[in-house]
Image (cartoon, rainbow, N blue to C red):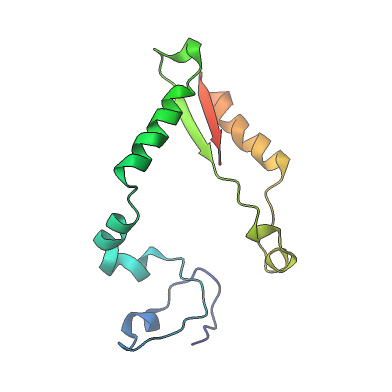
Length: 121
């Protein structure tokens, strides 16, 4: 099945696939493709308790001392470079985020919030 539409557009023909194995050479970005299995996906993508505990502990251990009893906003920045750094990704219109992009994005938060902690992954 090859779609004649752009990446990210929803196509109803994928709603009625046969029950046999099917290979789809496309990117299914719309949530609509997965609504019928939402509960199962949420269960599958829920971290196990030991992972959640370790992450919360790490985050709590990395609160600045002077903020321990204060409110602050934590912003997580996911830097995706591996697959996006390939020339074919850039050719397909997936540019790499620049340092300036991150600087401006972070400024958005620091300009309007008193305390912001950035966590970069």
